[in-house]
Image 1 (cartoon, rainbow, N blue to C red):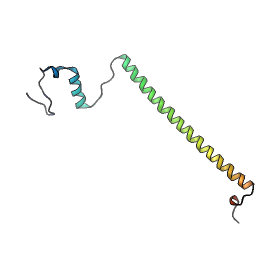
Image 2 (image 1 turned 90 degrees about the vertical axis):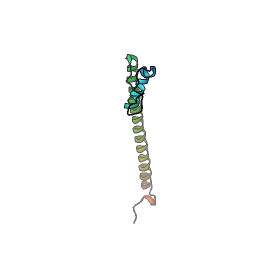
Image 3 (image 1 turned 180 degrees about the vertical axis):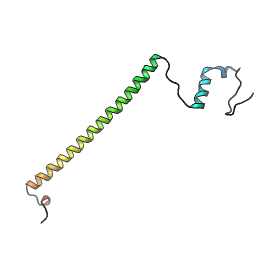
Image 4 (image 1 turned 120 degrees about the vertical axis):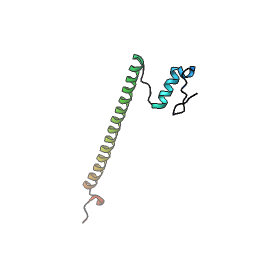
Length: 98
């Protein structure tokens, strides 16, 4: 029995070599590329799944931006109120040094 350069059998008359799944596994092993979805149902589900993932990433990004903006502006406004009230009430630590 002869073998190819990668060690696989070149004998094509055996039932294992003739099966489509074995040929697909050999193809996937050699090229490492997944099969495209077959049929309208699988193709549509693939597109819907991709759309759901993109939508989820977009929503999470928007929530992150909104949360950071709220955190930033609330912290900034609290600091400004604290400083302004301290200066208005004449606290020594906020007044300019003499």
